[in-house]
Image 1: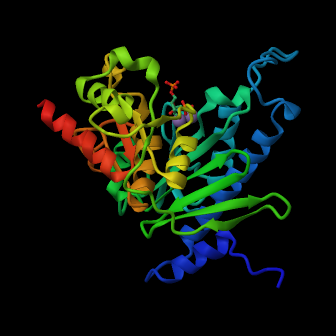
Image 2: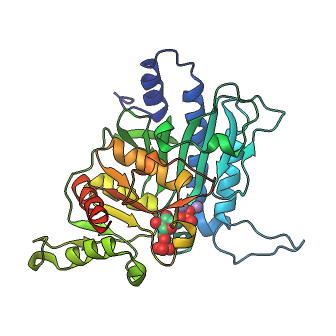
Length: 337
Ligand code: AHG
Ligand code: MN
Ligand code: MN
């Protein structure tokens, strides 16, 4: 047998067959997203060889500014997804305004939100980066969606996923029926199901937080971290390990693989903005994945997926991962009030 492996397309089609009334629209949309991620993966893999890194070649001879990889990735996403008739509009971390589907193309019933290149501070040092996306339904009867139609709580997501461009390129997806991971076979250009039904362990001894912000933290985070750092001689009675990749995609992927907690809390430095990470492009899709894998996701004070967004680029505090640790952090926030 040379072809007993499940491709991502086959997986999506088989999932869709179980949904009554499904038209194939969604399968086709996901295919276009997968294609975009393969293109970005290819660019990231070739890096300096295709001139997509950093700002070394900022101006060309005509005085045009050279594109950086997050701008290019944004364009790749738009081009791959605007033409097929599945979307009414898109929104991206890299665009100030929403992107309505141009009039020359048919409009569809979904809204696509994305962070085309997450962790882009890592790109020039050849450390993992990724793409995060979220799919919402365009409200019934709306032909020309505006920002307000994107402001749906995360619980309304139809699908969320990320592509990780690491030692292997991977795609991890949820449509609300668990979480599945696919690895890109470069030779045939297909994502193959490699990590079925991912689950996050309830307990962990590993945390991810940018420790350089310690002096800005609020008391509940400080308490939690102090207790972890006291290790087996402190109240937790066990030693903790730390990781910080500065790439949320890589961080979430590690948590899916071996448990852990990830925090980008609100602190005195980012308070004015409401936090560091963006609700619609980062926090909501990752929360959907984490919850579907049995983990938890909160701001410390409320479930992230229940927040009713007020603006497109809204930021939120994020605490997610292994259930028992996230619950502990929620209890520390409650104790504070
Ligand atoms: P982006 O590259 O899309 O702006 O996102 C980067 C985010 C996230 O991936 C990561 O967890 C965090 O910013 C890194 O923050 P620090 O620079 O504070 O380490
Ligand atoms: Mn990001
Ligand atoms: Mn980004």
